[in-house]
Length: 308
Picture 1: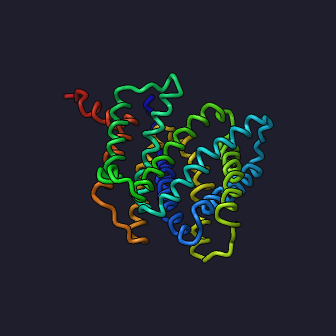
Picture 2: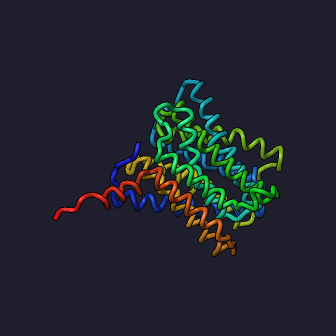
Picture 3: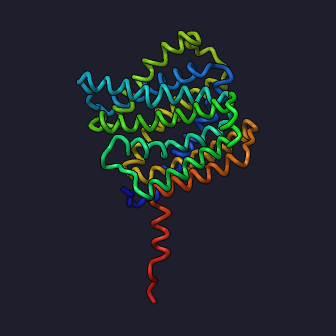
C-alpha cells in the first residue's frame, strides 16, 4: 500500500538528520577497522548501544516482556538485524569503499519487498513493485560492475557480503512483523541489541581476542559515534520519524544515506568511486521511488486536467 501520509516540516528535519547520522556511520566504521577487527567492531557497536537503550527503557519505565518466546524472538532478531549484517558489512568495508557499501546497503528496500511478498499474503508483488524491484536489481548489478560479476575476486566477494547483509535486514523485517509487533519500539530495539551482543561479544572474543578500550582516540571516537549515535540514538530517532512520517515516507532516508557516505568517504578517506557506482545508485533510487509510489503520484498529478 502506498503511504499517503504528509510529511511535516519537523518530520523532514528529523528525516534529514537520520540520513546524516546513518551516512556518517560508514565512515566511522571504516576508521575503527584500522585498529580493531570486524567482529570486535560489531561487538562494541551492539554492547554499548544495548546499554544505552536499556537506560532509556528504564527512564521511560516501560514494562519488560515476561514471555520466554519474546526473548527468543529478540535473540533471532539480534542475529538477523545486527550480528549478521553488521559483521558482513564491516568485513566488506575492509575491501571496498565506504561509499560503495552505502550504495549496496540501499538495496535493503528492494529485498524487503521480495521478503514481504514471500511471507505475507497482503504484500503481493504488483506491477509497480515488479518494476521497482527490477530497476533496483539493475542498479545493484551496475554498482557491483558487470566485470566483477564475472570475476569472483576478493572485491567481488566483499560486495556480495554487503548484499547478503541487506538480505538479512529484509528477513529481520519479516521476523519483527511476525514476532515483535506487540512490543514498544524502545524495548524491541533494546532486546534485539541484547540478543546481538550475546552473540557478538563471545564470538569476537574467541576469534579476535578480548575487547579492549586501550585504543587510539580516533578509534574510540569512531566506536562511540557508530555505537551510541548511529545505533542507539538512530534507532530512537527512527521510531520518532516513523510515527510522524509513516513507513513509506521513511524509505526516503535510504536515498539520503548514500550521498552522505559518499561525500564523507571522498573527503576524509580520499575514496574514488567509478561511474558505474553512481549509475547503479541512480537506478536503485528510481526503483525505490517507484516502490514508494511517489513518482507515479507526481505523474498522475501532472497529467490530470487543469482548470481553465
